[in-house]
Image (cartoon, rainbow, N blue to C red):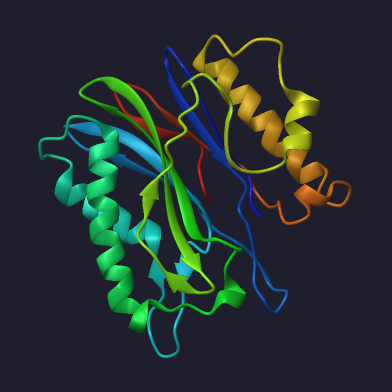
Length: 229
């Protein structure tokens, strides 16, 4: 479990995450879960949860975010009608690389959530149009299957939780969506800090912790509000 949230205002997107990753041996690491991209055709961010990094003995780890950055850089200048098309095309190539890394398409299910290897939220301006997409890499008992885009797409100004505590959201949600980018940053920051504060009080916060990272994506640029150290 982690905490990754995003929201949109007419001034741009905000995406935030915690930085805690717990390993099977109980070790806790501080990691980056949000990644920015800026290209002439689009600018945006993607954030990952679950097993964003897959490891095999005597092999460098497979990082979904790293491969995604490479593929976006190669594909961003192509012709895409919408962000969903670009992400779907990127996911197909990413899946091929993952199958090359995992012989037989098998991953130890003990390191995975029940149904997902990893999932991500993408927010971007493509041709100056704000868009958001949710991508999932599923598995069945450790056997990989084709990635897919989730068909349910909440309104952009809904508080979108890729992962996190619904209980905390009930604690902090405002009566109306934020009207400005600054208000959205404050809301996402408040939500994430509350998740961290309640780590030892709420069951759905027990693996949320560490530093808070906040990215903002406007029509001009994807940038950090609170950057990874």
